[in-house]
Each structure stands twice: as C-alpha cells, then as structure tokens.
Length: 251
Image (cartoon, rainbow, N blue to C red; front, side, top):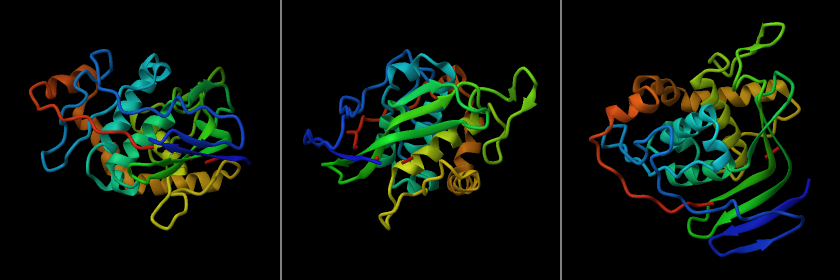
C-alpha cells in the first residue's frame, strides 16, 4: 500500500501518489441549516467544556441520517469525557473526525458491511498541534447495511447489530463512525488505536468492543438529549462557545 504525507498548516505535501489536500480545511462556524440548530452551544455540565462543531461536508449535510450521526459523534468528541480522551482529546479528535467525514461516500456493499475504508492512505501531520493521523482514499458507507437498515430486503433477514446496539439505530451509527476513527489515529505508544481489521470479522468485532468500552456511556447518553429540534429547544438559552482551530491517516 502506498503512503503519502501531508503537513497541515504549512501547506507542505510530500507525494508518493496522487492525492488531494483540499479537504483538509479549518473548522467552520455552524449555521442554521444543520440538523442541530443549536450547534456551538453547551449541552453538558459546565465543567465539561464543549468545542464548536464545524459544519459537515456538503454530501453529509444532504443526508439527514448521516448528518445526525455526524453531530452526535461530534458532540461526544467535543466534550471532555472518557471517549474523547480515548481518541487523544477533544481538539485532536474533532478535527480528525471532521476530515474523515469529508471522505465518506455512499456505496453498495455486502449487507454485513457497514462502512469500509480502502485504497492508499495519506499520513497527515498538523503543524500546530503535532497530531499525526491518516486518511484513506475511500470511505464507503453501505447504503444497504446496518447504518441505514435493520433488515436485508427483500428476504427480511435482520442485519447484525453494531456492538450491543441494534442495526439502523442512532447508537449503532455513532459507534460505527467512531470505530473507523480509531483506525485513523495513533495512541500514546505510536500504534493505531485500532489495528487493521478489513479482512477479519473477528478482529473487527473486537475493535468495536474496544470502542464501545471507551465510548458506550456517552453513546447511550445521547438518548437523554433527544435529537434535532428537541435538543435545540432544550439548549436555546445556553451560551455559545468560541470556535477552535482544526488540527489535522487505515485500511
């Protein structure tokens, strides 16, 4: 597999193959067209600071289901908790997740596959924070998999869940996205948080369990806050926080 290197902030790219750096952008301020109009407002206790959430990429924004999962994951990563700590802290994880989501495209894959990253990958170094990660050329979200469906039509066979969550549930979608994030980021030991598992279902299940162990509490807590306009009404009087600079490589 070919690897490419990119230093964000310095506009320096060492290329060993074709790549695009255009997707590696700074954080954008939220606007009123997102599923959560209250983006940028606090939704957790004041002793848990929340980072501003950049707007999702255009293709994510057009898909209401995917956009909601984007904001749910961003809410978790953007606050100080066990889950964001697992991913190296809020500032790093919010940026990497946002850039990862810019690579997602819907595709048709076997029903058992939810999301698959493939192709060459680019090693990215953020000059300001020294955060290192990778982005793959392709991140394929299965239109017929557990992100969008509970059963495999037309035979009606129920799809497998994601961790302990049923398919086509709010929690399963977030866990699925956070699983992929774990393949992009390195831990303190310099290794990927989650080892590659693209050809090993057992390894994939183990990796999902690792992420759920770190993030399950925050994922389950999403249900307490409702979604969309319900969550906006709950937070319409809370203070707006300042935007943060974005920082910015799995199979």
